[in-house]
Length: 360
Ligand SMILES: [Zn+2]
Image 1: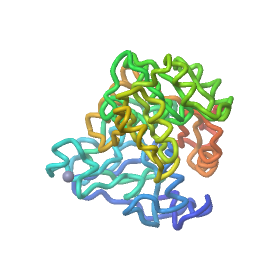
Image 2: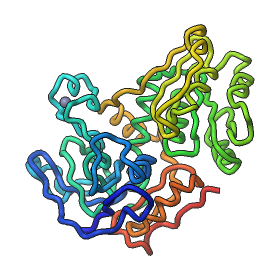
Image 3: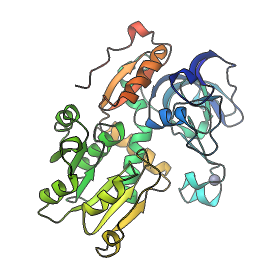
């Protein structure tokens, strides 16, 4: 079978379409024919350098995927089903798994990060990670939208509603509103009757984000103090919650943008692993910084269910053919996108792949 195999760390040239042995499912696993894979920032970060402990090369990236079960190690009731994959693999039996914190499990692995993922014709996954969905194997539009649900949906669900405890009527600040994650967060916050202030970088993304339903969209490239704008928009009080899924220097700013007693949830570090805080901003105002922690299967199931009932709509930037993966990845790296970037499986030839939609 063909896979987009990463053989080193660096630029796009380290990931090449390569003929490799087809994977065979072990006991409790199934082999899935990939129908669509949605890209995530981690796909690029891990191509450049080994940022996640336990990730090794050669490697097949792709955490968000949907496919058809074509072989089964034991449970053959999934054969022929179209399944959405939860990328979090854990033992399912230990105390931490039973407490719904699977990413703390000793056996924790991530499909597309510390084990092979969806940028291939075939991928082997645990049967217990599969959710059967009702979609035809040739419905590229639905497949692309579904593939983009798991990582962004479950992360936003966990960050905003689980760790963040967002309640109806609260004001929440969501950065990166043009990213798949930020766009998912806005949808989920609005569906829970929150008042959303969105942050974007650049006028094109601001125009798009203004259609999202957020009360206010702040272009961080057009202001030298977005925190002051949040304070101005909340009568000087500050937001109840800032959902920081970027990390780095942003965390200290996020803290100052919250009200006294307000919360910041840290759900990611794409802008940097280290930060500096002005400590009085934390203790004198009684604010909290909350770690995102492990998302649960319930977070994933809730996000998928919300998508199915129309409470959560995935924003798609563009859809690409299997052999166009390098172009899709270049678009992600360009930062000139809005929403999720999706690559279809090889059963959709490039010529039948939907036209990509421009972000502008
Ligand atoms: Zn476990």
